[in-house]
Length: 129
Image 1 (cartoon, rainbow, N blue to C red):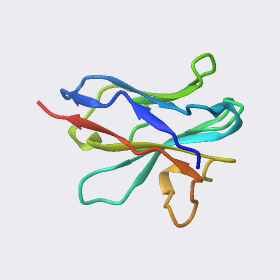
Image 2 (cartoon, rainbow, N blue to C red):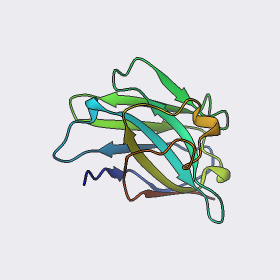
Image 3 (cartoon, rainbow, N blue to C red):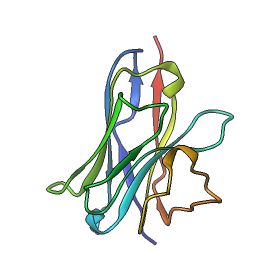
């Protein structure tokens, strides 16, 4: 069973920045589309961003557009999520997941409509003063 590993979460003040990384120990992330998802307490999991295996095309949710950026680091075999201008509503557990393709629209993604094949266990991001 393929297992992704997220890192980089933590506590940050509103307006601050964090960079999350998604790694695939023993595997090659370049072969897969990789997405970032998040789940706030008491809410459904939602899509944040996705990048194709080629790295040439990305999708970003409207709620984080202009603040979050997804990218691949081929040397480190990771997919990173740079998060700037963080808001309290960005608080939640952030998951990365891999599949052969990205959802048609990351903003309208649901787990039932567009399941991802491989998931990590998540990393907690808390935005609070």
